Each structure stands twice: as C-alpha cells, then as structure tokens.
View 1 (cartoon, one colour):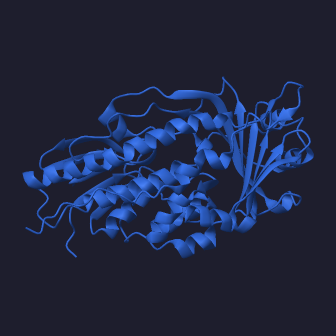
View 2: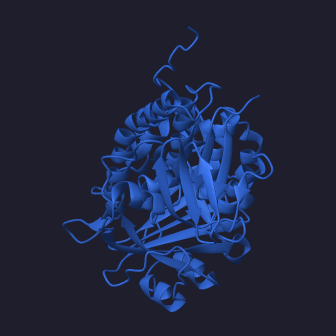
View 3: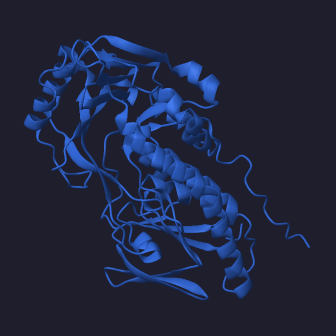
Length: 405
C-alpha cells in the first residue's frame, strides 16, 4: 500500500506509540522521535478504563491485554483507622457488561512494550530530542539537539506536559498546583499476604488517601498515596520519595496499611499539577495528543485512556487523506482540515475529563458531626467516572469526505 502522508510523532510514551499504531494501521508512514537514548517506560501500575481497552482490543491487542493485565473483581473503600470495609462494588464481569469492555490494572511498562512491539521495525528513533520546528509549506521541518533534521507532512506533539510542541503551539503556560503530592511504587504481594491480589483497594482518611491495586497477575501491588503537601513542588515522576516521610503520613492508620508501607523498598514522589485547558491544540499541519494536549490530575485514572482515544480519533480524521502527493496546496489544506476536525471532536471531551479530575482529589473521608468517619461526603468512584468509561470515542465520528468524484 502506498503511504498516504508522512507523519512525525514527537514522544514515544504510551500516547505517542498509540498514535503511531493507530496511524500505521491506516496506511500512513510514521516516525516516532524519542529524546531518551533507549525505548522504555518509567513508572509502575496504571488504570486502563473500558473506554481505552475497547479501542486497544479493536487494534488486535485483546489477547496481550488479558495476558499482562489484571481485571479486578471488585473495589473496596476502607476506613483509614480501623480498616473496616465501607463500600464494596463488584467489577470484573459486572463492569464488562456495564461498560462493554474490560477494566484493567496493568504495569505501564507492559502496555508500553506491547504497543512498541506492534509497530513496524524502525518506526521509533531514539536519541532525538526536538529543539524546534517550522511549519512552512510544503513540509514541517524538525530540528533535533544532535544537529540532525527531518521533514514531515504532519507533526503530532505527544511529548508530555512539558511539551516542546505545546509550547510552540500555545506559548508558555503556568502549571496549576493541586496542593497535593503522590508517592507511588510497587510491593511484592508475598510481602503483604493479608491483602488480596485481585481487588482495587482505597483507604480514605481525613487528609490522605491510599490506593492499592494488582498488576502482573497479582504478583505485585501498585500503591499510590495522595497526601496534602503545599511544600513539595517537584513535578517529576522519577524523583525519589523519602520512605520515612511516607511512613510518617500513615503512622496512625490501620495494620494493613502500616504493613504495606513497611514493605515498601523504593518509592517515587511527584507533586500533582495540571494545566488550564487549551482553547487551541494546533495550526496548519501541527497538533497535540495526550498529556501534551490535556495534562490532568490522576484522580480519575484516565491519562492513558484519553491518549488512546485521541489516537483513534486522530487516525480516523487523517483517514480522509488519499494517496495524492502530500506536498500540494490542496493536500496541505486537507491535512489542516483533518487536524482541526480531530481537535473539534476531542477538545470538549478531554476538557470535561481534565477539569473533572480536579474534583477527584476530594474523594476522601471527612468526619461527620459527632466526629466519626462517614461516607456521606464521599461521592461514588464508579458514578464519578462512569460516563467516561462508557464513552466510545470511535462512535458518531464525523463522516469522511467522499473523494470518489
């Protein structure tokens, strides 16, 4: 099949690789440029909602997801001091029936690997840090830190919240600090045998919250501890977390929590920031995707699924391009129209998810009038995000123009 247009994706994280896979499936020539010297994904576990998994299944990754991911059988919200289960909501088959696709917890590296291995050999170019680009007809010219250059017909910025492409498109922005930071890491489940390996657990306290869920077949538990801290301002996923500080936060909590914290050997800590939603994701032959377009707080567990949705819609909109020579004024206009169509579909939805994620940080227990913990002020985690998980990004997309005449 003759490639339709050349597409450059900047950033080989999960969003960038998802975009590359979606676009290569449509017959485009895709190159992914990654600044790191090797292709790998940092991080621990993550959530893949039904809205993301339904798309990955359509791309032929269902079997690999079943092999690598865990489908939690239920979610339990537990009280912080005594450990009593306050709410239990079935997941597993019930959520499959409710949302039409599985809900997975999965190690980030496992999803990253399966996306990378699904791409044609040579798609990803590591050691290419983008410094600047110019979008001047007939092509977009990329300039990298090592002095090399490349030309492309379309540029997709998937280079995260600190995106070079985003800064060029939208100008400098100010990160919005949530007042919270998060510790995250992995614990081998055999170190905490009293905790289940098939359940998503939330301990909700007066100020902090601890989320624990299984990955890699339940052999490991990912933990994410969200704590109030106006002083920790480092926005980095790789910054080391002080284990003594982590233990101090949960020193008065129930034995299950203290056992898990005591089993932690390494943690990362990052300050929780997002950005105000953009009113424009690009111009000409340039657009954004994933965290570069809509960095959001992690409380809805939707960062990856929203990037996968972006990729699917972007590939649909660019499918309007036929095999005509891309370096023509007419094709340039069609590229720009396709990208603006993609943005028009995605921006309202991601803005709603992005702003809604800010409210997710308040889902913790507060004392009632007699000083006891109550669920009365805690909204349901399922109801809060059910509209997101039910969403099918590939349904009701704008029709492709008829170019048969």
